[in-house]
Amino acid sequence: MLRITANEDHTREMVLNSLGIVTILKPVLGYKQCAEIAREGYRTGKSLHQIVVGERKLLTQEKWDELFSFESLIDPDALVGTGPNP
Image (cartoon, rainbow, N blue to C red; front, side, top):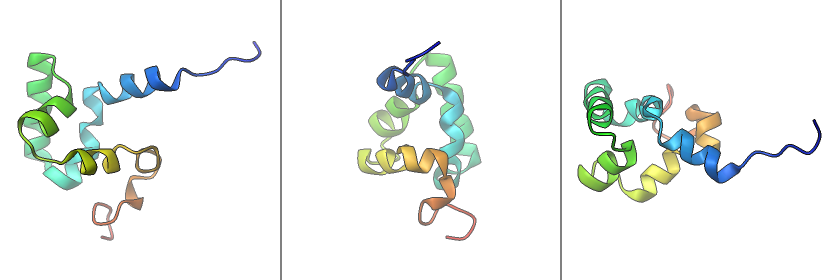
């Protein structure tokens, strides 16, 4: 097949609405809080973004965007202060 292109917006939405991305938040929020957030998302059907930024205000939108930028998704250690060598 030729000329197949990904729908970038749809793909990004699928990733950001997955509870699996909670692992990216662990260095910032800690295991226990991430587990609670994931459980709430599973029980309620809410996105992590809704819970973390909108409801609990644990992160600013700016910090969320930094953590979930394309660059940090492919190289999480590149984020200052969140990798193994902050």
